[in-house]
Image (cartoon, rainbow, N blue to C red; front, top):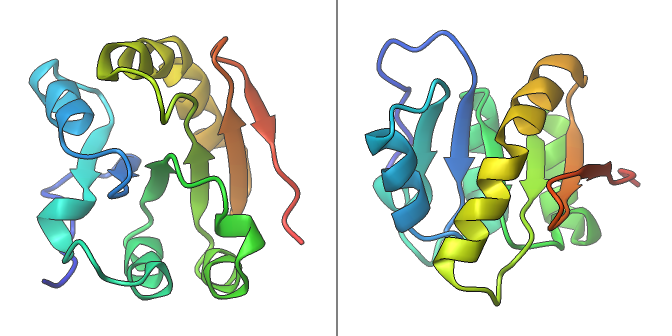
Length: 139
């Protein structure tokens, strides 16, 4: 599948990677998220390599949301993040129930929106359970 641009939105877009699944992105859409929502399964095969889809997401200007805390530790993924100016948020709670993960995202939602609008790309933030953000160093 090829990446597609969002339908008419001129603001930021959150792209939920495959580690998040589809439940949270679909709920955010149903709730009328003011930020456009896309998710991996709409655009890419499940087994596509991260260093293949990251440039496509970067070209669209989307911000990646996921549980894979290792993008900045893998050279190909880090290179794609830097080369394509991608913003990334590592969510807390990969082992938690969907409800707990959703609550954490809800606590953090406004901070994520502020960081997207105020942080030069590329960037990576770690989302804490408390809803606070910690910026990761890009090596």
